[in-house]
Image 1 (cartoon, rainbow, N blue to C red):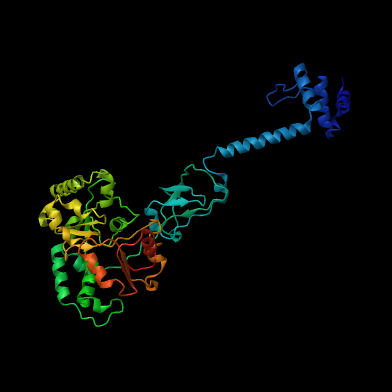
Image 2 (image 1 turned 30 degrees about the vertical axis):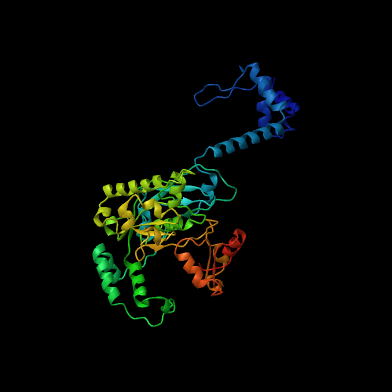
Length: 453
């Protein structure tokens, strides 16, 4: 077959309909189909394509060119290409958006690079930064930045909103510099600091009128105010870390005995008065809860408080063996807080604990010989219904200046103080609601009214 016949054969097979109008293309394809293509020669003189083309290759070319649906084939190839791109993106170590839309990380101070930084995304991803050496020398005008940082991503669940990079560099907590007087007092050992306080109390400035204190109710308002100022300046308390919950270090924060629990909670979380160095302490706190002690050790119906008292005795003895501070003063500079009615009775097994230690108790009954007037402290019982909002039900939720009742009491007339209280204040003053036994419903209603104490 001549070349003209091959060209006509290719044209008749529909090459023109596919858009192949170039005569050279028609020539090559037509000759391939009729096996009459002249041999093509490369630079080395070897034939690339010639008359020896086998029949399977001819059939494959005919199948691809004339019997294939090019539209479907194009769509299939496009879908496969998209799937491949998506799979590659999903396997990347960094999200594609980070490469395309990452903002520049700016640090205002070169000192920040000496510390470890973190990048926080808006969807709560944390990316730690690690310093590596700069690959190129830095221009002096660009600042003193001596490193660049790479980001290491922790895998976490993604959220729908976009990423937003922020550097978490918390500002330093502002601290008021101490005065020369504070530095001097804080440098003193505990005994010398107490001597300094005694001298200051003797030379306390006289106060005639004070906007915060009502002078007639104080024996010496000038000494009281100066004593309070020195207490805030000097006092340091050491909290013994010994003891396991729930009896120790686990405050009871609800109910009528919640006062002791809130004292423990607030003191242990305080940084002004609490010290971790016992050598700098003026007072030592025994961090146990009388309410938790009763719930943990008391056997219902036994009417026996001896196990509770023995437990406290053994605890104090263990502190005396482990630390030198109890034996140094025999407990005079140690104190405890117990709001449960049984609090004072749980101390009877330890003689020095009863006689020497400072007891802050709600049951301040002098008739038992445990509470020492002038040394021990009476703590008011305060009912806390909701520990998360402890002040909600106190005083009817009213401010102190808006409460019409100064004090309320109702109960049985046992002991020595209650009959005297009823005798002097019953029906004597509208702001002092003092009663004997009342029905439970009336007493509950009265106790919920706004009052100061």
